[in-house]
Length: 312
Image (cartoon, rainbow, N blue to C red; front, side):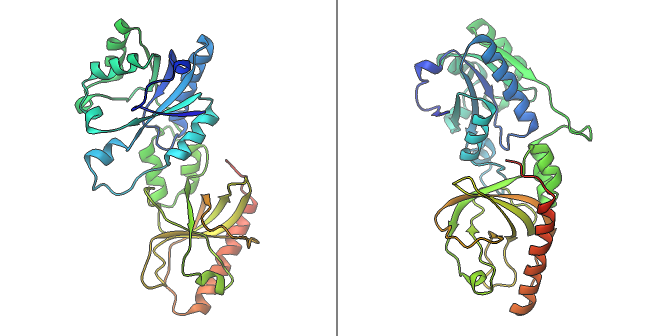
């Protein structure tokens, strides 16, 4: 799958495409329905299929003080879009110039890129001050040869509409099961393994330290996790996500310990899936109670993961 940017011309072999258009952070079940419809139209018409996303997120441009809230990185979205069947991922470089375009100018931009059809969610808005709606998209696009379709919201088993907001709330409360169900896979943090203080190694529980970057901060605490290595291996483990209150100075990290694994992961990019919240972070006076707590966490995580199938 190709990765394109809005600052570059559309390649000739991808002109005439059907585009799934949205932010798609998380690429949850509702987003997948929009992409699936775009793939169906593209295949039926013999056209290329593109999934578009925005980076940075519009909120980051207009409200830079907003706490980190991303559910996926661009690299994760690229893999998810490829798995959905897209021929290309288009990254809209979300600048103030793009945000200032009125709805007609934005539609004309799509037409200039050779986009033949656009599929969005029903709540999609675009253009300056979010003045454009799905109805606007269809009305403006029609005379220019751009066909537009909107896909209704997808509801969960509880009857509620699946949304990125709902997934964020679930993660912030430590409800990994709900987040997994809405995403159709576990929430995963991807990052490069950093050198740390290596204390875990000295007490028999080596960890792979990962910065949380721009991801949403889930509930601080101890999790049963799965690690996805670059070579495709999947490792079970337990992780501390938070500020490590037993250590000074506190430092916000994701620190997975992988069971029965002793290889060097430094400077490798790995993905860590949050499978189950075990307990909140706690402060311990001394290494003995800390080691006892970690041992219990690992035992609990092993038991949970033994009964949890792996979801990519």
